[in-house]
Image 1: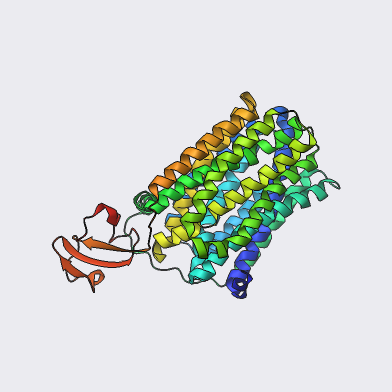
Image 2: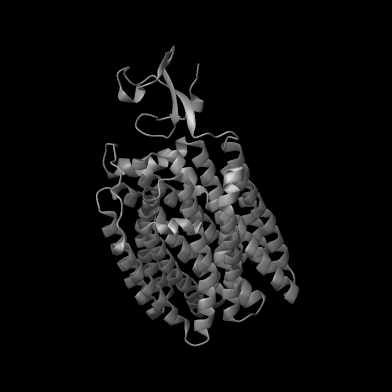
Length: 451
């Protein structure tokens, strides 16, 4: 897996991702404690609303960023967004009101919504070989996992020495270091975009790509299942730890670290597992595990706190991390297989926006349900959502899903360059190649009658 780090450009980009994630991890712990200090036992509702605002920024900004990505140099865009995030993080320690949290979260995440899809679309161009790209996806998941494991541990150590407000300074340093590493990377020239139309048309294309491609519709359903399970981890952990188990602030880091530990083990195993089994055979069973784990969480949060139930919760958090990693990591492979090189920025921007639309629903649901109905009911409802989403993905995603498909063109003239090598049939011209929705392919071949 580490062989991809021999590529200098990827090594710099990956390091930039790691340092930014460490800073973000420190901010996650600090923001939870800040919300608890300001709102007390209503911290779940505050966090749920703050994370919903984050999702609104992601959903609204990402498609626009993908549409203009070909007009702005990628290095310039990513560096500008890193500097913006660093400036916002620097102001978070001075927050004293809940509304101030909401405003700063929107500004911070609007910058992330422009940065992340641009970063994701650059990696397959840096590493064009599928084996290298698969390893890069696992490395990226590993980076998120290590952040979930290392950042809470680092936060716990720092909290023993300083107040949580100082953790926001680590976030600022992480974003500034990320900007410096992006500046030092030599990025490939993006492929030319052939689509016509303005910014709105380009932004809408990514959503149409997902709607028209069965495997991408299934990916969106699986993202919804992950959002249901992940919401209870990121929104409700602080109340579960502080109120239900009556444990100190450092135990919050331990719980989030358990989630990261489960995810990191899965990320290490995935490259070999994907080569043997394929994406569908890995992602669907992992998604079906999520509602089972949430049912166990409901039972644990309904029982009196004890040492064994605390240990069981840590194991459940680790299991959620493992299952979510197995679902999320191969997603980039599906997107790359389903889009042309020129359309990768729009495809990743659409995935970023649409997947976070799922979190936009589950984050506030997790917070508001926990505040009003309690954690057991919250876990049951989110588990039911995860199960329904996974069943939907199973139906949508064809069991046999090759990248190269036979299809017929009846809307192109016979002399069109795209029809080179095609054979005439009654309904037009038929040929076979790696299929993706683009200007020449507007519907999926399953909707056509092949001869």
